[in-house]
Length: 91
Image (tube, rainbow, N blue to C red; front, side, top):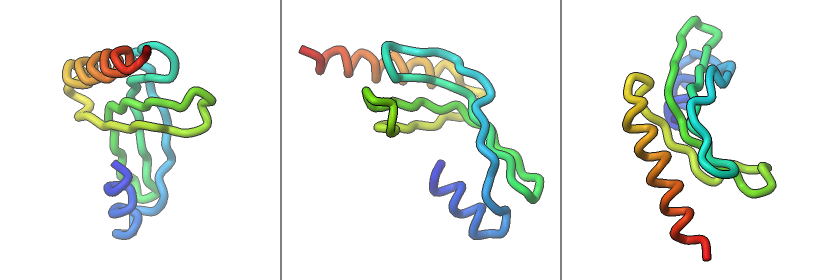
């Protein structure tokens, strides 16, 4: 998604306004699935599902994964997979 934002900026769309439209699911501390919207000054809008894993101090994003907004099943499956992997790595 970062590459898309930079490409659109370079093509003249400008810098987007970024907004979290909805928190879809939370797993544990700092692992969130949400709907995100990007609105560009030239009128272009882009909406996606995203998973973010935040650091324990919530001062940085350690993982960011985007999904088609029309495929919440795949996003939820990935959220559960990431959570299971994090749980497996915890002693």
